[in-house]
Image 1: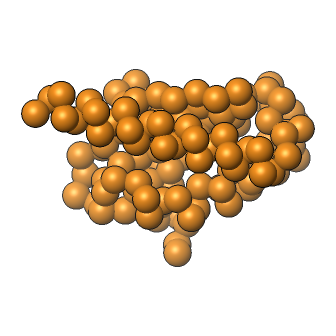
Image 2 (image 1 turned 135 degrees about the vertical axis):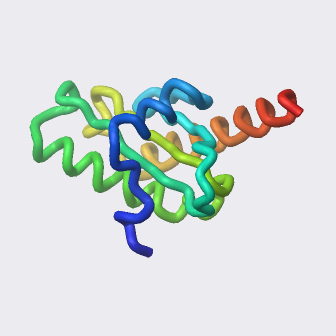
Length: 122
């Protein structure tokens, strides 16, 4: 899989997802999910890791961990969807298995909320 084709690139894309979609939070991550309305079938993803998490080394490590957690779950997302995974302070001390469970739970909850919102709109 070519990761660069699955990324959100611009601030406008990040804003569209965070402001217009559904939100699901856990203790160390917040997941925003939205349908961008593009013709692309591939789900796209972006990560937000602020300086409150740690220095550049820590932030890059957190991003790599989140990327590996999200990568196998991209196929489960609705076509044309976009996801922003925002980390919260303290995420660098969480074991990988716990972080994986939190992200999976938040993604599942966000997908459910998005589906419910789509059914109500019909």
